Length: 224
Image (cartoon, rainbow, N blue to C red; front, side):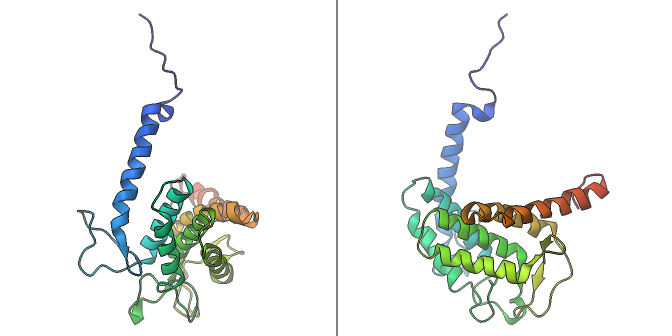
């Protein structure tokens, strides 16, 4: 009996799978549009709607800005204005105009004004993608994200991001998180692409060496 030989090397390369990926991407982009709020993007409920009292959050706003920027860069219509909305939110109501950096949400409570590396990695990624999409204000947002990462979060001695600070950067958390540094690796690769600065690749490599060749290797290669 003859053995079937597909025209593609893997189902990942199959035309039908590529069509499914494209269709799924369009479905998710359409779904995500509902997360828009006047001052950013918020969480959707299980029905894909903004719940009562929804607030714009930096994490969602940065992720949506990145996603919509990638859609616009691919030539999909209707996403440029959403990228611009995200840039405005990250440059305005979500940013700490007094001390720099980004809050987790707009109008945070006094006890929730800390600055987390996790969120700042997403802002850097969003700004990088918005620059790729050539949207107004993207470069200024990128420059500010780089300034904050360089000035506060990156530890050259440790080869990793510092985890978090209080609002005015005077108190630093001692913990070093793999999750925030994982997202920083993604952001640094994007920064390397848009800035053509090799230090971001070097920093991404140092994070990988620390988390994998350091911590994981000492734990039977189970990432802590």
